[in-house]
Length: 286
Image (tube, rainbow, N blue to C red; front, side, top):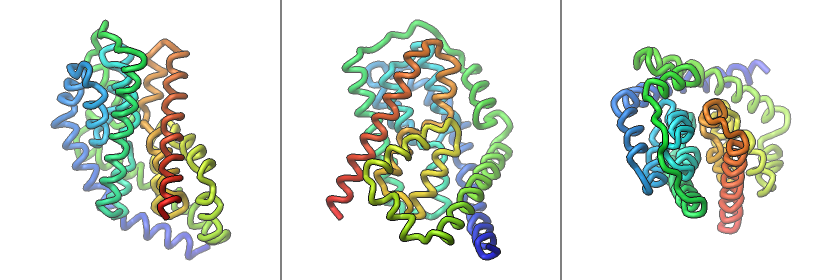
């Protein structure tokens, strides 16, 4: 047990500088380009899913919450909203960078999320049609939601980055400790086989974890993938369904509850189906 605790602490301490630098870069990007990306989504028109999916992979504070607000006011289409939700990386990217994951793997995951998001968004608008803008959502309201629900955007770049770093480091500390305990008592091979040999169960469970409406879901999925406990298909299922607090804000600001439940079900279905396909293809190639 002492070895497990020491190993866990050392693992997390090594990540802190990389997490802080990553979040500093993300906060700088948000302050410089946040309003511009929201403006692009407003003016995107029929290309909304393409722009939303492409911008979703760029790590920004509260981008999915902004999309939820814009959709509630019918400023963007349902397809654009789905593209943003599916492509949003939430806390995945900082964790991958801090863990020094291969650049090729990071790029592959981001491009896959963007591609699936864009395809799903375009298909959604094609099948259901585009809903025109009928209301105006003030930017100040979006940032108010962002500040209270997710990221403390208005408290300065360094303070916000430090807050993110501490919060995510604590999540990683807790998750890593639990994983190290499992590996200690069960064994890495036995634990991996328990999930990796189940191409259907893995994505189904990972998709549910991804729906957790805060950063915990994406941190858990990313850590499990990096530890080799789940495969790329299961990881993609969880990362596709993980839209940060976007869904939470959608249920808060969009008063069409049945519609919200439909969006939730569609997000889960697309994420899980994509994960199963990726898992089966990966097993076939291997």
